[in-house]
Image (cartoon, rainbow, N blue to C red):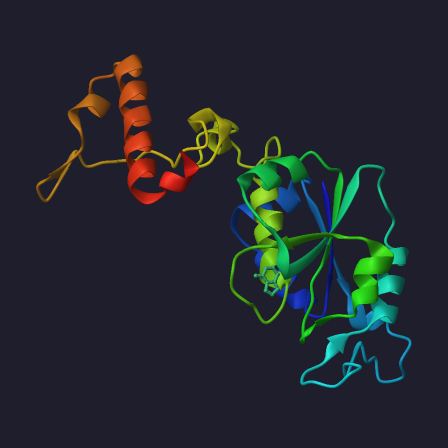
Length: 225
Ligand code: ADE
């Protein structure tokens, strides 16, 4: 899967992708990450990509030219989605992550400054996504949230494919939060592992985990039920 990320800070993208499981996914060729530096597409002699807003008001606005030219320069796969990261977008969740993982290519546009010239929306018609009800200084964290959460659903990305199926919000857990996990030792300073997990009875273990998932979801996220 290809992630083309349009940004003013390609180093943020590169440094994240140089670590951990995402790095391994890149090395194995499961994902390809291409950061595009918006300034490289500016026709301005100072490589300016923003300007002051018509009508006044503070801050700067990301201008059309470099965004349109960069977008048009990216080779499109047949099955791609163009996404603009903005707090005004639809709220991101696991369902969208799974949906996006079926695409061949995601083009992610990260903003900075006060916002985008509205003609970027009108002319390029992106899908707008927000990663939460707060305002970030730029879209890079949002793009990385999408890259990471989408990649986890790709075959072979996690090494052990079942893992993503047992995640919180996953269809295997009927959209519930994940059950609690335990590892060695059985007794850590008086804190014991529940007996049921030690008896090797897979049916009982599965029932216990389902109940725990439900209990946790009721308590923490009743909105998911
Ligand atoms: N850019 C700034 N804030 C954002 C948010 N909450 N989600 C996505 N992109 C953003």
